[in-house]
Image 1 (cartoon, rainbow, N blue to C red):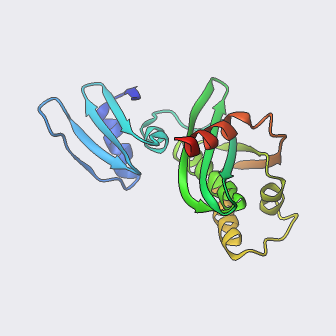
Image 2: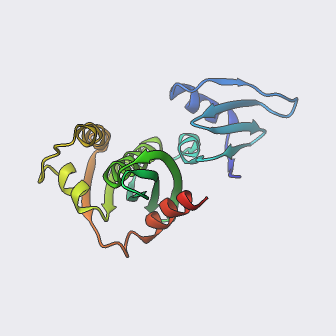
Image 3: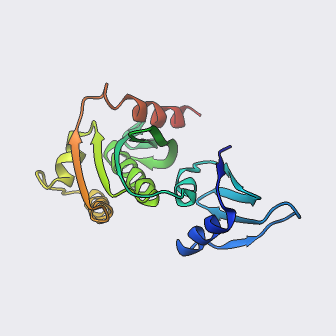
Length: 197
């Protein structure tokens, strides 16, 4: 359960600015509480406690500092193609791992899961308000489609590619590259762990 030491009033303003509804606390000690994508933030004097599954996007919005460059790793997994699917992602900056996570996404093909993982890591990086992003994934198909080197014939993948490009345009500078699976191991582990749970 992440605890973010911060000015709880400024954190409330950041959430409100992001369009997230903030409600009064349930006890005398709680200053306020907010829910976002399955996670809940509860504010106390000088700190906010975030709980629930997949807290990364809510944590990102509560972060006081912004900007800088981040390296993003993504991986999707599907058992059955199509079958039960999950995504894994990791954000790393100069200080180390900023955020990571894995979650199931229902039934999907492997390529759909890869795109969903890429969208997820880009959404989290956007919430953290990084200026530059260097994305790495072990799906050559996805990387080359996003860069425009290969066509996307599948309508579902084409729609996902459009969403990815929209998210990438929100950064001052971005690049995406194909890397061997060994370099993408942590994201792969997170996606598979989500499927195993």
